[in-house]
Amino acid sequence: MKSWLYFFLITPFLLLQCSPKPVEPVIETPIVEEVIKPDPNTPCMTLNQLKGYKREEVENAYVLYRDQIKMGTMEAAYPLWQKAFYGAPGANGKVKYHYNDGIAMFKHFFTEATDENLKKSYVDSVRMVYDKRSECFGEEAYIAGRKAFDFYYTFNEYVDEEEIWNLFLENIDTKGEKADYFVVNPFTSMLFDRILKKKISYEEGRSYAGKIFEVVDYGVNNCEGKNCEAWEIIEAYAPVRLEALEGLDSFYLCDYYDAKYFPIYQADPDNCETIELAYRRLLRGQCAQDNPHLIELKTAKATKCYTPPPPPGPLKQAFNAYNEGDYRNAIRLFEEFVEKTEDTGKKAKYTLLIAKIYYGDLKDYPSSRKYALKAATYRENWGEPYMLIGKLYASSGPLCGPGRGWDSQIVTWPAIDKWEYAKKIDSEVAAEATKLIRQYWQYMPNKEDVFLRTKNVNDAFRVGCWIQENTTIRTSD
Image (cartoon, rainbow, N blue to C red; front, side, top):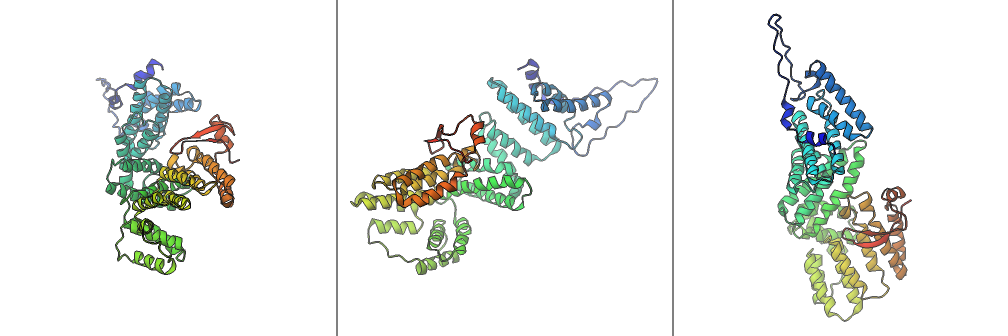
């Protein structure tokens, strides 16, 4: 890197505030200096406030640095950008593109740099540019969100997690349901992790989860034009990620489960599966026994979905616990039954049921796979456990990526592997397996995605995340 580049990076920020010394007036010919009025749109120096050659010099710098950027010569653009930025950070009082351009240059220099201290200086420069934009044009919450986004995705190794978190909070807390779309997915990811790691309380976590649901609902229903594409991506990620928190005991409470699951029952009030699901979820949310929705579900369950209870013992206790939404106790009791019974068919059946509870109710995918594989050991040529594992993998797009794109699409490869295997060993699941393979084939990466990553169709590939399986590259086209 050229020496001048590093020199300008460490130039004190206060230079922005420096102004030329006034010229001594000629005694023989007194003059009246023009009073320069501040621009009403910004407290920062604008082009209109500059005089003569200085204004021309800075205006030219604004034009010339952008020409260099268009040619891809960032190093040549940088000193010109500095002249424009430091000369008139307020530009014409309206445009702000010079801030975006500066950040883009520092990101480029950061990517190219190998020296750690230099990388840190570029991160500080990005921070400075954002702060100056906020000073000149306000929009503090928006700028906090932009800064957090860049820190999260580009500079996360050089910025403290707490700073990123607090910047996201500033955007969410200030803008409410109108929070900027680009903060939703990274903030949701941070929120999820901080709740699991107990860095924040369940109370605070519930509060912000509720805010994210409101933001997504508002954004999806009020978006216009191309912004709607972004909200579609967000809707495919954030709510699904937060839904996984249902697996935490006592995280979501009655209001959440009632608002989400009672409408599912209302849409199909004679379906025992939806009746029992909604009933269990409201119990899991600790809804009061006099809750009218819980009473209605309990009545529907008793009149439409009666099934003879199993005989007294661990199995009956396990089903009672499950039907009451006490999933972890149900798992413990099902395991007790599996250990004691000599019937391998029942061992297989109830071990797979444990896997399904981990999948559908506790959202614990690694544990679900563990029990599915264990269930498969009790019965030869049984495709159902592998069907479940395929569903686990296919559902992992929001867990392993942003909901769309490469990281979220590649989970379809091991999912299809499992369905192919299930179909191969068990004709009873062949029809369902074929249907799922056709359904998810379209979600695989396309040839261009593979080419851009210098991969080839049929190459071996290892999918990471929690899946950690070897597979084969295939494309949707």
